[in-house]
Length: 176
Image 1 (tube, rainbow, N blue to C red):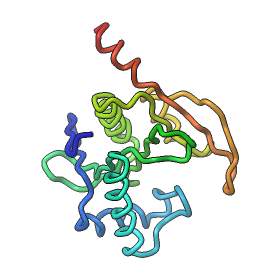
Image 2 (image 1 turned 135 degrees about the vertical axis):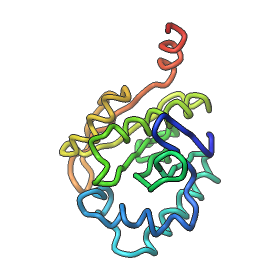
Image 3 (image 1 turned 180 degrees about the vertical axis):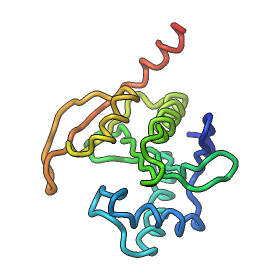
Image 4 (image 1 turned 60 degrees about the horizontal axis):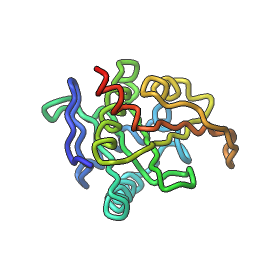
């Protein structure tokens, strides 16, 4: 996968240790960071999260990006691939946008760029797991072509498993 991706409005770059404070602004917001066990309460949690993304890169070749406005602007969110909870070797995509920047199509733009890069890297299918109440994330997933496969409960309740085969992106590009 590519360490730097640019789109019309965004620059996706690998996280660095010095990004922790800016990312923590997003991760500590209870309105934005609703995944996992909820908002992070310490900068150390955020720094450890960045370290785990670097380890995922080393182990699996999967990248997670800081999503910024083009030309080194403010961190707007994060997006990337990780070894998810699907029980398969196929990666899971995730995305999160700062509360003040939501509703502008930024998650869709970032996720589309990550999927395009995954395709170019030879990844055949990507998954997402989303809570049924997370309507915004479900809309993004639909916009990037993910479809529900099944729902399974975990300790926090129902979780929708969505998938997107990437080989169909090749066909649509070839037909254009």
